[in-house]
Length: 80
Ligand SMILES: [Zn+2]
Image 1 (cartoon, protein in one colour):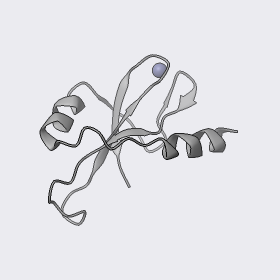
Image 2 (tube, rainbow, N blue to C red; image 1 turned 120 degrees about the vertical axis):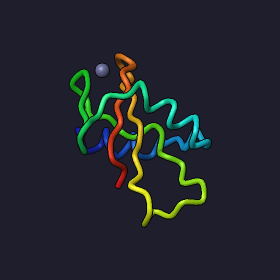
Image 3 (cartoon, rainbow, N blue to C red; image 1 turned 90 degrees about the vertical axis):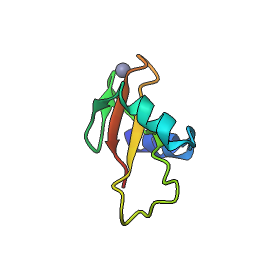
Image 4 (cartoon, rainbow, N blue to C red; image 1 turned 45 degrees about the vertical axis):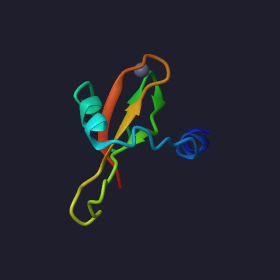
């Protein structure tokens, strides 16, 4: 059941915010999280993915922002 929930949340990935500056601004409110972030008893899927803005995936270790749907807490994690 947990795997199904994760698959569903991956399908709902939103690429907003498109702007790197607004993304970085949003990460300031985030708490660092591991690969399988859990909040309020549920696994979190990525809500925002760091925009590349012309940078290569070889140059940047992209991060993503995860937002808990229950409490609204924001987390930042590595995006692989
Ligand atoms: Zn939560």
